[in-house]
Length: 378
Ligand SMILES: *Cc1c(COP(=O)(O)O)cnc(C)c1O
Image 1: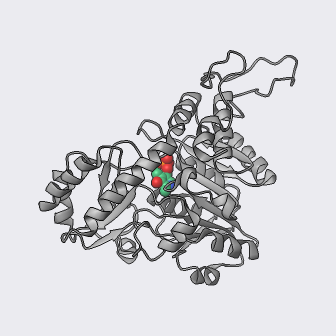
Image 2: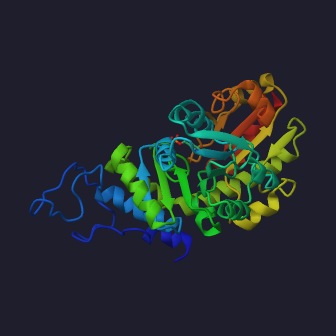
């Protein structure tokens, strides 16, 4: 099955009992048992719910894995995955991970003895040196947020395997439509489904897919024990969004390449970050491991003042955190999504005060270009 077909026919199609072509919303917490312990697959909705199950089957198929899991947010998904580890374990992570991922590792999970350190995983050779005796996982985000850095997933998975450690990939930016980390050797893939998978800025959710039965059983045990599950309404909404992921990603990409072309020629823009650009340092790797480059682009306008002017003047780019939805969004990472990263570290990473990130939506590209034109004139 090709991806666009899989988006519609993957997982569980419709409802056997009634012929409904959409999976029903099972708004239910508990299930009648035919005898004590004798149930029909569902006993309590934290453990399993048919609507959530349909979503979990769908994401499992889309990521070509063995088991799928749905959580109440991307961060709940990530936290559950980290609970596969134990006190004393160490995780080596991509240095410009999502701000919330940095925060949960350094401000919450560290208190439970799970250590994290950060390395530029785009530089494959630097990874091996950072692996410690107690390193149990490599956590990779590619492309990264907001600098769109690319990590070679196949090469990372090879290093991880040689060291007997897990490869975990945050695939939020690429989505399973463009990139499937499990097929490149990763063990676990996770998503903030709040972004492209949902696609309409109306649901917060997280998804995980694993490639191994034992890890799947362990993660289900954690999901059921800690309880950060996604409710049936949101599970349904997410499935509804996922059906159009293919056509949305194609259009996001078309609009983005128009904008990238425009910004590249603009004299007020000093730097532009997009993996689809031939000048991107890891363009060839992006091309090798993904079927598309996505709808996120960052560019530097030189100063915080200039960035503020652009933000004030745009009409069709909504000033907001988040990304991946039908409407174009604009943000200044240093002040917004990445404010929880200390200023010193932001500077090290290149997240300057003049850096603007846009999530290109599905409006007419001409309108978006005209809007950027008038905003950049300042
Ligand atoms: C938004 C985001 C998250 C966190 O997901 P939530 O659904 O907001 O909890 C994690 N990783 C990336 C790359 C994100 O963009």
